[in-house]
Image 1 (cartoon, rainbow, N blue to C red):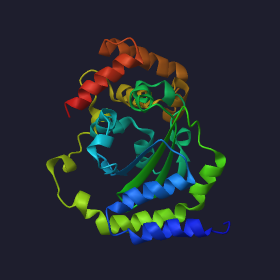
Image 2: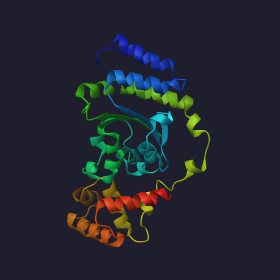
Image 3: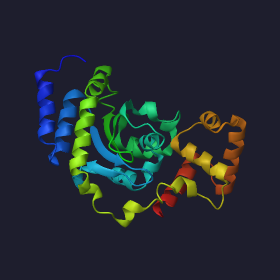
Length: 263
């Protein structure tokens, strides 16, 4: 690791001093902004088959309707959530490293990423326990453009230190968010939404394929993932549209949103 500068030491000291306070999250945003340009920042705790917990921003004025929709429903299609669910839980990642091959063509991407005006997102994934992972998502719009390699390197350079600080903050402050168990906290319905979508009309295999399509997997990627031929996937896709009365992936996405909103 390159020599740490006096300014960088001061940044880390600032975070350490505020680790027992909620102001730590604002200080974290300030420090990250000195290492990497970004236009949006969201800090979320992911838990298996439960709704995410939003840590930052806490000001409702900074929480867009798209962000609230994401936290309540749409996160089940998100590459970050699914990467964590399947075992990716530590490090610095560009969104493209975690997303399926046709993610940017999905209705979900158009709804939850394009609405933010983002062209790229960088994520710091920090394991907090065996069942909790913190994701710090830094978004960049068209004016800022993609993250530069030197900025990515800076985030990776300090990741281990940030990881330790965030883990300590969660140990000290996490009960503020998890201490009161609500009925919503214990619901597994959202995590099972893809499994139960159109269960009365689609076979188990067809529901599996719908879930992959909605997340952004191409027919070829689905075939590779399921160990079947691309032609078989095409037949399943045709049957899915027939059984759902749809003609496009956008139609399926809209049906899935209706399904989510009844959870």
